[in-house]
Image (cartoon, rainbow, N blue to C red; front, side, top):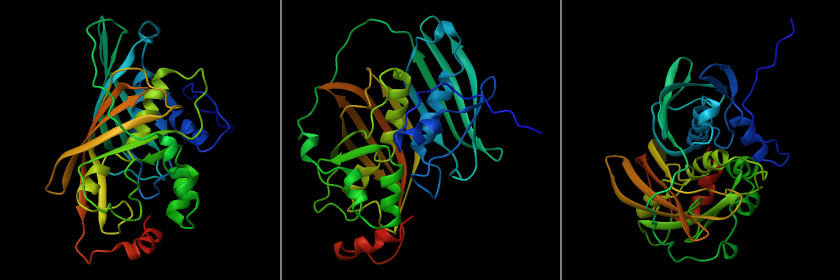
Amino acid sequence: MRRLKMQTLDLPVVSSEPLASVLNILRLGIIGPGSFVGSNSRQFPLRVYGGQILAQAVVAAYATFANEYKGRQIHSLTSAFVRPGDVGTPTYFSVDDILDGNSFSTRSVKASQNGKTIFSARASFQEVQSGPEHCRAMPETVDPGQLESSAAFFSSLNTAPAQNMAMFNPVDLRHVDGPIWLRPQKHPQTRTQIWFRLRSPLPQQSSQLLHRAMLVYAADQFMLEPILRAHGLFWLNPRLSPATLNHSTWWHRDVNMSDWILADLSTPSAQGGRGLSIAEFFQNGTHIATMAQEGMVRVKDGPRQGASDTRHAGENRK
């Protein structure tokens, strides 16, 4: 019997990788009203990438809107990661319509695998409205053109983790204080700055919703970084076990993921194997979004590795 092709959400089609694969992941299959299914990114092969789930939740929530509410933009997302997800298992999304008021719409989103919840969120959307306006001034920083590209960095390393990032990460990251992929920062600090944008631009007709979804996709991979920098840790340390627990995003203004965005990050606290990071995002001098993320940051017992053997550690990390 011939199987009917599942209807999917309408998103732009691009040919350039790895952006094409990411958009395909966000192009959720439609099971029924408020019910969707999606595949998973191979960017991080050990478990489902949190930024992917966040972006899929944004897209799924908006897909439940009647035409009269389609002009509303997502302005906040509060979420919790309950269980780790399996990359090889489809992720199912169920969306409940909580409210469609005069100005705001609220949706509740749940992601599950094998009948168990792995993620839950509340998304709020608002009509475009006028009102009092102010924002924090963009902090001083260096030009991203003066910094090393993460895409070039990973492409230059002949290791499985590095090549995986080079092939599947659609985002170009540029660290103002230097990257901490393979070794810790020399002088621990609780603040850092990261420039980022998509390696390939989104089509010009892409919706603002897609740009905002791609912001959470991109940022989740570095939100915990100030905690690591504060404690002399680095991403490919085999003793490190990080994971997102809770994540909130507030979009203040329009986002353009095809152009450079500055993330100004800090960590006010870490304790009990958990840490909190705050990020403010700026584009063309304007404050466009704010994120807060609590993550698990555990360090297994064992001998500390020095800078001389961190490259070997990176070769054996996921």
